[in-house]
Image 1: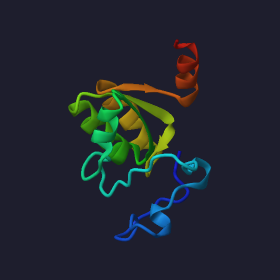
Image 2: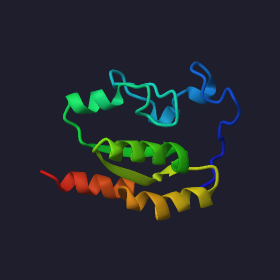
Image 3: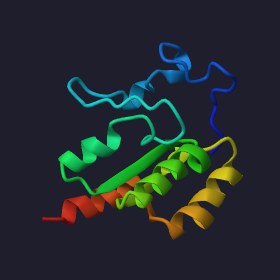
Image 4: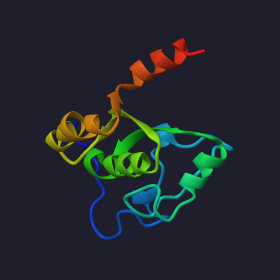
Length: 128
């Protein structure tokens, strides 16, 4: 699961540069809410927590790069704030496959539910 392009260096996440652009296959649709994350945790310095609470959302579903940094940070922070968390392991990646696997096998299961996108879709289809 090595990532073909992994942004590195001091300008990797600067707004307006390719490193901060949305990946086209998962680009937000017209009208979708966008919360710009400026650090590792999506909760720090953003309106994410307030956005979730005013909508009475108590579960976050996490996917992204890098599993062992950003995804773990989102889960840890979310759980600390009283949210339930689900990680879609097949929708995450890290610098190396070993880093990703360690995170989804040894760290994240102690904090949240780790599953796949297909399994989450199946579960959602069964819920009332």
